[in-house]
Length: 501
Image 1 (cartoon, rainbow, N blue to C red):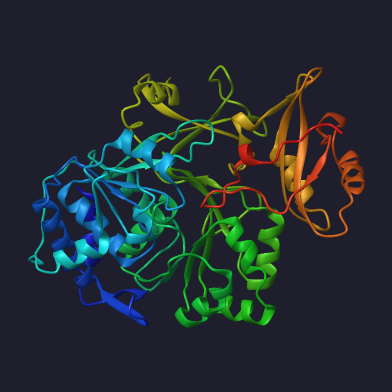
Image 2 (tube, rainbow, N blue to C red; image 1 turned 45 degrees about the vertical axis):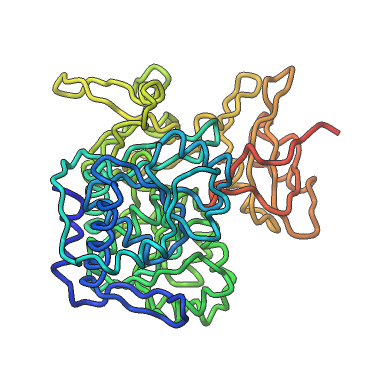
């Protein structure tokens, strides 16, 4: 089965139903039915074939959130072309690496963004494509595809080196969509407010795919804007919202009366792409009347673990493995760790990427072979994330393996300290990293976003009361903001350097 077969439940089965609201270029809100989206994408598919885009070819998407992104995505999966989404915040050097690696036949972009493409790159503007496609037939284009055919190549953020292209198949995406609909009770009655970038798997593989598979109604915004949040929520009255922690921090700025009014219409708030601080979760519940559902996924695996829809959504925890997804916490020798102990998270299942595009060495490094209970060898993906499992099965993430600080032979897990600091009065955000030290190997240092008055001595005293001496940050560096990528993940390698006074 191809991915489009799941979407046909809406594109064909709900053809007359209103599907999508978006801001038209001429102004005002335009509404499209699922049948209109079907025809629009069919026309684009025929045009792409005329321009030589066929099964297995890559097509770069350097586009902001707009309905034509969705038209183009549907057209590509219908003809078997492989979508290569590109972060619109990237510039020529970063884009050049992706284009050299993926070798797309062309990049589809806008006039404004085209100026950031490397010279000589074959490109189309989405407006030109859409205009030309209007003259093509609107009936279905279908190419025989296997579920293991690639649907997209999604490039990682590259925080530890050159970004790698994770191959995501039709089966990967289909498995993910079905899991979300079942486990989060997403139905055609929902109203989904989409503010996350479609170039990321959170916005595309979770948001758009859940919308298309369920047949609910979606309002597509170009981006999340805190100044427009009240207007968007109150005009569209969503029941379903996917966000990242920084978005929820901004939503907490809403007046209490408006927050309660919005919460009364909502069914489910979901958070991912970065750890959700427990205090944000608690404040949000008090203000909006909803407990945010936190889950855990990656570009290479889509969704792995989720707090339950029914049952306890435990602060700080990401919950239980999703159906069909197997999770193991292993030590350095690939032995299982006990409950309450910290191990690296390994994942296996139909959601997991088959590997990295044209990077056999990176693929080999990221997968290990483990014998299952029947004695058969299985490939497990090494996430690089550390976690611990409670006795009742809830999984809590403890940070990245590469973030682990080893100071004088002791292991320090930054997230433990970060969460504590964010509980302190006046501290809005905190991140802890290891800095080199001749005597102890590494020392923990905290970077914080803080209100006035800023009193590092008070923070140090609080840490001394809460932690062993080796965990106490050697400095508290105040910054205006923490460096983040487009989805809100903190990029520690961009923090300002710290040197001893």
